Length: 358
Image (cartoon, rainbow, N blue to C red; front, side, top):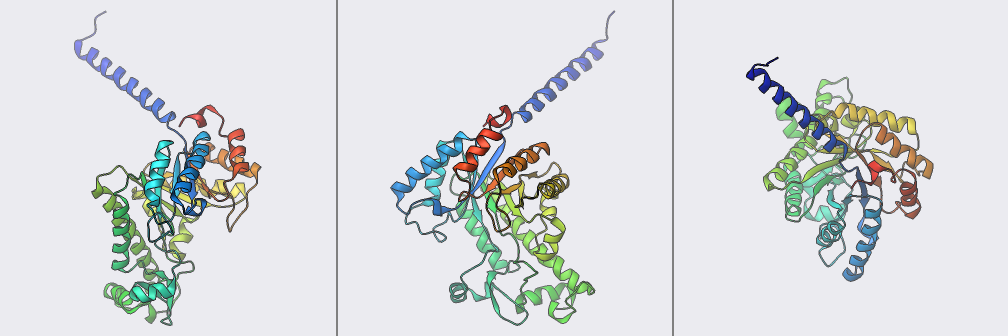
C-alpha cells in the first residue's frame, strides 16, 4: 500500500515533533535542583587572605551537598566593613565551585535614622504626626533611583542574579505622609490620605493602600528594566511574605502581581514555620498562583524569629517542596545552616539520584 508524498511528509513532521518533545521533557527532568542559602558577611574574616580561605572551605562543603546558589547580603562597600572588594572575592570563590551568586538588596530595611537624617531627610518615611521613621519612603522617585543605580553598579560584576529582600514598606501600613507623597496621591484622587477616614470604609483610603503597593511594584519594574538593559543573563528574585493578600494590604507587597506577570523570575515565600501543614498549604497556594511565568522556591527557616526547626522537620519540608514540584528551596540562613543540618540533608534527602545532579 502506497501513501501519498504529502502524508509521508506530515508523518515525518509528527515524528520529529514527538522526538523533540521527549527530548525537552528529559532535559527538564534533569535540571539541577535549586538549592540556595542566604549568606551574611559575618561568616568571614575582615582580613582578605583569611576570608578567601574561609570562603573556599565553606563553598567546598556547600558544593559537596549540592548547594548551588547563594543569596549574599551586604556585598557593596557602603554596607560592609571590608577594606577590600568583598563581592569580587565572593564571585571568584563561588564560581570555582560551580555556585551562583545573587547579591541581596533590601530597600525597605531599617536604617540608621541619625545618619540618614544628616544625608537625605526627604527620603525617609514620615508618619501622620510628622515624625521621621528609620525607613526609606519607596514612593519617593529619588529613593527608587538610588536603588536602581546601586543595583546597576553591581551588574558590572559577574553576578548570576539580583535578589530583593525587604522589598516592601514596614509592617502595619507604615506609609509616608510627607507633603510631597501626599500631594502626589492627591493629584490622582483629589484628596490627601490624611484628609479621609483611615479605614476601609473610605474608598480614598482603600486607594491609598493600593497606590502604595503600586509604588513598590514600580521599583521592581525599574530594577527589572535595568537588568534587561545591562544585556546580562541575570535573574531577578524576591523574598516575600507568606500570604499574598495580607502582604498586599499591610506592607504594600503585591508579589502576586509580580509572579503572575513574570516581573520576577522567582519568588521565595518565607515559610518559616514548624507546622508542615501550613508550610504545604501556603507553598501550594503560591505555586498555583505563579503558574509558569515565575518559579517558587520556598524559604525554609532553620533558626529564625518565627521558628527553630528540628532535623526531622527539615527533611519533611524539603520533601514537601519536592512533592509539589517546586524544583528547589532556600535555607535561612548560613549562620544556622550548620554541620548538623547539612549532614541531615546529605544523609536524608540530598543523596538521591535527582538531588545529586548539579
